Amino acid sequence: MERTIIHADFNNFYASVECMRDSSLKGKCVAVCGDVNERHGIVLAKNYEAKKFGVQTGEAIWQAKQKCPDLVTVLPHYEEYLKFSRLGRSIFERYTDRIEPFGMDESWLDVTGSGIFGDGEKIAEEIRAAAKSELGITISCGVSFNKVFAKLGSDMKKPDATTVIPKNRFRELTWSLPAGEMIGVGRATTKWLKKLGIHTIGQLANTDPEVLYPFFKSRAYQLHAFANGEDYSLVLHKDIEVPAKSVGHGTTTLQDLENPAEVWGVMLGLVQDIGRKLRIFKKKATGVSIYIRDNELFTKQWQCQLPIPTRSPGHLARAAFHLFERSYPWERPIRSVTISAIQLIDEDVPLQHNLFFDVDRLCRFQKADDVMYELQERFGEDIVLPARLVTKIKMQRHRTDVRMPTGMTTMRS
Image 1 (cartoon, rainbow, N blue to C red):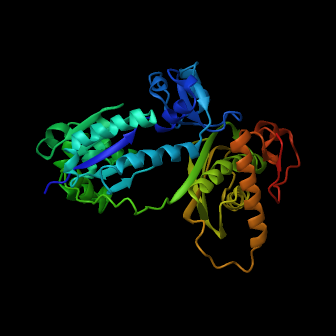
Image 2: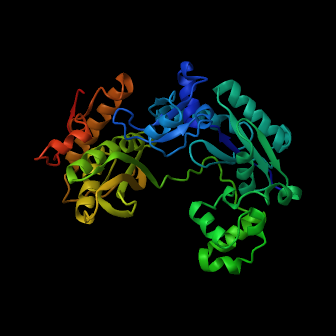
Image 3: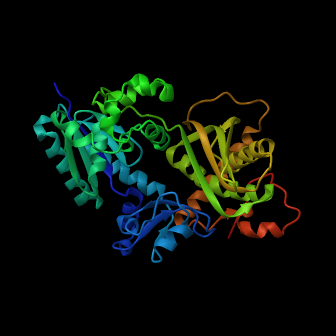
């Protein structure tokens, strides 16, 4: 029996939720960004109005505002995004129990056995209508015979559309598309494929995988199979949760960082967002990684294990900073910094305590962090901050004796 798979993708999810939360944003150019007050955040998401001006995810806020002077920037509210994601999932559950999330705003649905509701296209149309009427946000759906082409279909028409790619027409509908449109073909893979003269999905499908092997190893066979419609991976049951592997946050600074004190200030700012996400997702990190890019755009990465799992921003920042101090040679000033909490585990998993680590002190810090986040949720994100973040990063250059704090302190901004 031929499978029927739907890929449902919320359109401009973060920005759409923000416009639902604040009706005054509707019709305006909106971007969800990092720390706007510090002016070194980046665009995390944008709506279609902003996209028309060329605003791109990942670029600095000042760059986005050069393209779109009327751009309205808002801070992210991950609790709201999770709530809308769950509400969307409840709509999907009306049709099947085979629901596999692909991030917060995308899911695959296997509706092969859901014929009582109609065919895949009819179910997709009902899902889109329900999301629009009940949640106030739109979904694009792809309907196909496997996960790869269902995902491809949802990307082909946006926003608020359904695209069907049947098995007997997938070559006609997809082989002329750029190879980079297919899942599994990222920027690096696309670059190598172009060097081989492979630009479309059809060209990839008709290339002997042995030609691809020297460049992609075992992935060569998977890429070739996907392009030929040979994807037999199952859509997981809704109760099977695929754990997140990491939570990260990064920034490109307006001015190069020239000393450890400046790096510490940036890292401490980045981990506030990471700690908030870990708290929302009920996860702890067992390791930390850092990505450092210098002013000549050379990037280096390091990671280390934590002495004990944590979601405390202060402890994550200190671990990242110590890793940076012992690893970065300071050959050039630094342009951007990214921190990731890695190897995540559920926060309620029982653990063997480290005899050489002050666990009680860590617990006290985590309780203080929880209080800080609760205050920020109620009264705004600038109501209470780590003391170190009250001073602008650009003012640190005039300080001659700056030491890394030994503890996490909160105070009224």
